[in-house]
Amino acid sequence: MLGPGIGYSPKQGDLYRVILCAFLGALVLLNFYGGTTVTISPVKVLIQPKLALRGTTHIMLPPVGEISAVTHWIPVRLNIFLRHVDLSALEQLWQAGQLTEDKVFEILKGMKLSLVLLILQLTGIGALGGVLGLLVCGYRTIRHLKIGIILGLLTPVLLLGGVYLTYNVGAFNNPQYEGMIQGAPWMLSFIQENVNKVGEFSDQLQMVAGNLYTMFERMDELRVLSVPAGEVTLLHVSDLHNNPAALGFIQRIVDSFRVDAIIDTGDLTDLGTPLEAELLGQIRQFSVPYVFVPGNHETPEIRNRLRMMPNVQVVEDEAVQVAGLWIYGVLDPAAELSSPQPWTPNQLKTLLPQIAERMDAYEKIDILAVHNDWLAHNIVTEAQVTLCGHSHVFEVKEVEGQLIVNAGTTGAAGVRGFIVDEPVPYTVALLYFSPDEAGTLHLVAIDSVKVDVVGGGFSLQRHLVQTLFDQRVRSERGIAGLLSN
Image (cartoon, rainbow, N blue to C red):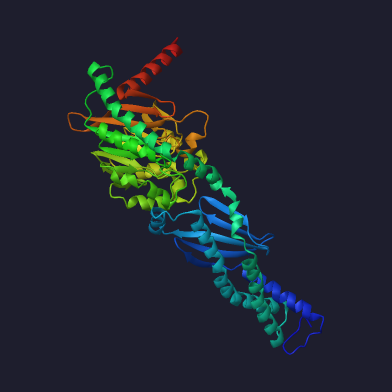
């Protein structure tokens, strides 16, 4: 006989095997359980138990990373996934001064109490697993099935009951960090120590912006850098990386230089969370259109939140007309995911035919806007200028007949700008367009503005478009002359 059948009464020695089969069946099925969702204001989380070697709790914060701690004695890992944050409730807690460490521990205690609900849900799963374990092992009598149900019911109660009784919320006083959130302890400490400096930086940046226009006017009076008067002025910004001081800087530039529209080539945030979009809500106050081309640090959540702002146009693989100019924006492929990992040049190369095909659908493109500077240098286009960012290095150059402008980092690389040896400047580009006799707008000049708030200095430079192309022609003629000799 291959296994005990119905009506078979096992020997006493088989009882241990019956218990083992039922217990293992319950454990296997419990380990595949998807978890339960609970709401503990202002967050909604999914709690998922898994068998493990140590009793740990892992708080998953995609795409940021995870926070973990050894919280209990039982060898069960509790995965807690953040599913939703009620931003309005969070804002109310913040304004009321209740978003404190005690509130965080209250949320963790709420998660502990939710284990009771989880145990109740898992008893049914455990009972089913105990029965399936016995059936797989060949035990099919009513007595065996009763044993399987009882053991299946007891397994989650014993495991998670032990977790509940030994759970130590205080273990999160010294948590472990994985992923991008590894920088969180340092970042929070840095922000706490330097929060007042943000206001100082913002004031200094706005003061510099206010003086820049006057300085350019004086230069034009001396005709050192004079060009035909521009009819349309665009402000190119990029890579703000959550720097609130940069937003005040942009506003002052817009007011001083009478900017008609802003083009942002991405990386407005660092982690791509909806909360970051709320922190950057000052964009709503800009009085001019804000054209946004997502970068690799954006996520679907950020893009959707920006679409809710009335003055923002999120441009993704399409062309829009702003201030009389057609602007085509290329969506960074990393923005489709909840991760800021940029694509490699080999990966980006596969996108070039698709980008070219989509651009061919438009009769006219004045400005090509992309985030990744590699794409900017490798997309073939008849646009007057290609705008980009990503590298955090300001650049204005002509490459094989195509003018490329990299705005660098208008947010001075965000928090990361403070941890490098050399200070990172705040950089923007101003593009001036003038009409010809037929009324068609042509790019005539580009102003680069670099401000070093830490060092207390700034620089500015005007690039004449015709001069940039003349330099290439002279260079090619010089090379041809050398070859002919």
